[in-house]
Image: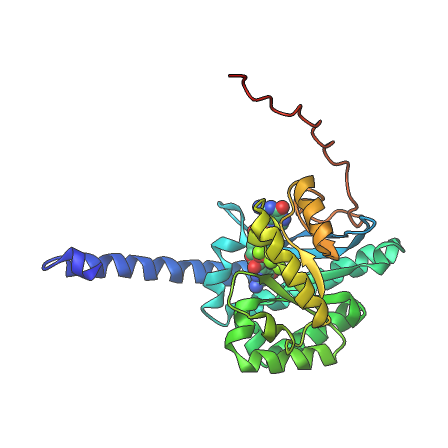
Length: 291
Ligand code: C2E
Ligand code: MG
Ligand code: MG
Ligand code: MG
């Protein structure tokens, strides 16, 4: 870009860069304030067993109720938080809310008491020594048993950082479960799965929610490798009954996706599955035009 702007374009480039940096700084400051003011909200999406379609638990997904901006999705602010220690404040708050919410649902509902909650942990938070204390405090504060908390860590974080692997081992020693998130988007080899200190493998939507038969074949391979490594498999982003059938055939243990449940703000009761759209009637076979 510097080259394209040519001589005399450098000033323009500087201005543009300065404006971008300023925007990021402003967002960071607004987010820091927003977290302190309690503007973070969690939505919950059910994780559903493949065999009998019962709800196994929920994934907690953060949103920012930013005054004047509506409900901001994580894609618009988590990366910015990740640039600084702010992401640790965010992570601590999400852990606290998610564990308290599941504990509250469980207090009035014995069915919910058998479910777990997944929390996304950023790479930077995982790298910080504080993360173990943050998890411990969230569990102690909510009274939730450690086995009911699943920490979701994206695949890319695990491949790059040896410290992340050590930290995961520490966290698992607390009794919490670990899920490798977004599997299939990074470069983890199937061989590396063996040495991952994890319990669950979440296959990314780009693979699991695909309608391409070649991807279905890949999911089958991944399930086989996960089994060999002792991991349970959750498929993400299931939107149709056809995808669901393919994932069942591939041997996935659980699924998550709009087909079953859309992420929603918490109500008084732990969410179950609502009615789903009836499958489309089978279309008559297309008849080839006769010559
Ligand atoms: P993720 O952890 O892989 O979460 C799944 C995302 O897929 C969520 O998007 C969810 O709403 C979406 N999703 C679920 N089912 C379907 C489906 O059937 N179709 C489609 N198209 N999408 C589906 P969301 O809530 O926008 O979150 C995006 C990402 O932001 C998450 O991906 C996660 O990486 C990150 N994130 C969310 N909450 C947190 C958090 O509390 N902390 C951190 N560090 N990251 C978070
Ligand atoms: Mg996740
Ligand atoms: Mg994911
Ligand atoms: Mg994903």
